[in-house]
Amino acid sequence: MFHQLLVPLDGTDASLKALDVAIPLARALEAKIHVFHAIPSYPARAYLAALIHSTKALYEEEAAAHAGTFLGEARDRATAAGIACSSSITFAPHADEAIVATAAEYRCDLIVMASFRRGGINRHLLGSDTYGVLIHSDIPVMVCS
Image (cartoon, rainbow, N blue to C red; front, side, top):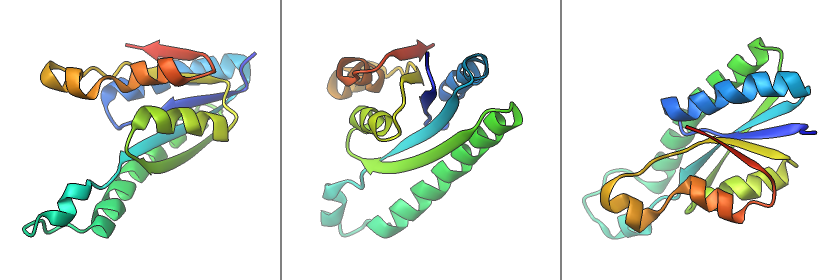
């Protein structure tokens, strides 16, 4: 039924719970897992701020290193459970669009993701990455809360 599961991770406990759901599911389905992280693009307005000490290159280097750490741990967890697991990162202004594009690129047939909850004004201004994936994805999405 499902052969390649995409598990978007952001390093939070909620996203790791989605991985904990995906691993036994992949084992039962004899499927592979691809873990993925979308790093927010370096904000353009930062170029205009004279007091910002971090450069785009430094930001990207540090963000990729941080993502590499928790994606590596996720790969290790899946591999220890006997599941083939690959990983990737991308820089993107919209995580939901990056998740859908990655699912297509890696030919995933199920997305297993956490319900990332934003509160207050952020919820109204930024929306929900999970909701964006649900709206834009052509493949099934399993939301873990």
